[in-house]
Length: 247
Image 1 (cartoon, rainbow, N blue to C red):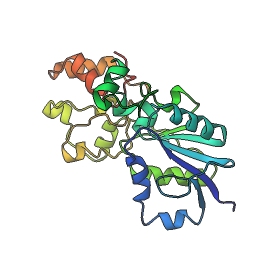
Image 2: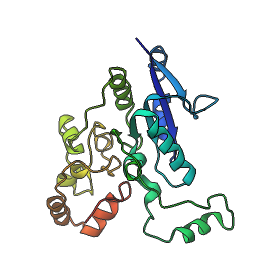
Image 3: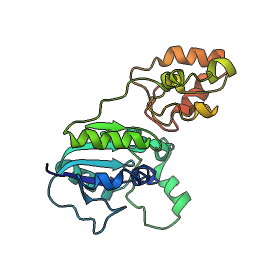
């Protein structure tokens, strides 16, 4: 069977999503029997774009012109382009201050340095190119990345997740932190698939995986209001990872 020709790139991000894949120590040797990493700057050198790719995994959002050039090149030469992680899918924490003056923000951090000249407000990948699939999470679960590789080896894309974190909580028989403890838990509005990692440790869901499809925001906001949280507080929390949330 022909090996899977794979590219993995990181844009504006913390590299945690790529590390999640590299942390699959037991599975990586088996992967390398079926996969050729032809462009993976974080793990392989030299990193040279050449030829066509069966799939490209991209971590991070876009905030620099050279990142956009790289993304366009990868899109052009890849059968599938997959956004990996919340920054790639929704903008993530890098986009928290998109509503503010970009030049003022740049100068407050970098001063007179021209190192970041030309930077623009961070954007998710889908704002610039067509994205074939999304693997959300900050970072994604290792199992999700392994399942993604397995799907690609079969020539398929992963099935999209459509359930909220609340469903994961119910499967694990967790106490509901929102209804029972009046905690600001974003599980009803957040995409599941993490196995309710945080609520299982009695930590309220922070919404790091982005919005669940067709979320009933208005009804959820009424529930949060009953628990003492106004709309601004809830929306502000939701937009920490997904600035695209609308009121």
